[in-house]
Image (cartoon, rainbow, N blue to C red; front, top):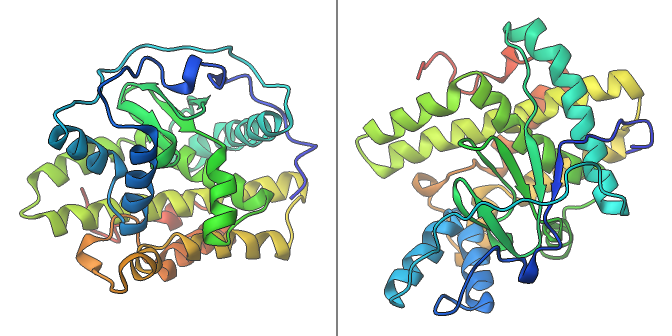
Length: 293
């Protein structure tokens, strides 16, 4: 994937220089080794790592710190990885500013992407590297420790510029869902769900839609810049396959429990990524398939 033609976004908040990278995490809590171990375990099992970390803190007689407002320099970073992230984010802004009004009748309001190292505060609680990238609806920010990219390549066999761009575009896809009102409705439906398995199925649909929206973005980016090829697509497919719930569970525990899926199987993730990539259509990303929230 070539990113030289992409416009760097100024909506990047760089917190990588925070003292200790923990935004006020004090003594008495879990050590970083335990946090990382629990994060990797949760990610492998398809469980939100923040739930495992919170539970372990309670067992240990500690609690997660309250959200502390933290800020960093705003603008496109100058280092190579920061520039890459800013360029991908800028292209999501340019694509969705055109596409969302045209296809969904909604104006696009870009999110802020927070770069951090280790951990930092967010409106959703402590953002931790071990939990992977995520989107926080209350503050409309994407949180990313780029060490996750090296982890993708080292542990999961997924890597490359377009695969990393797919990860960013997936989180921005959640922001698009938020602008469309889908995230709040999904959360309400999850609270009303009769059991955890039903709530998990709603989570899977939301995650697969974000995969599809990432594909839609890539389709339009390629129309604008002709900057991805078949090798790039194979990278993204390999990454989507590697982070399917079934593959992660089989690798971690030798068995697969579909009712515990929160992001979708490898086959589902590849299917919806490719649906968006081939169609370039928001309407094609209806993972609820006639089941309204």
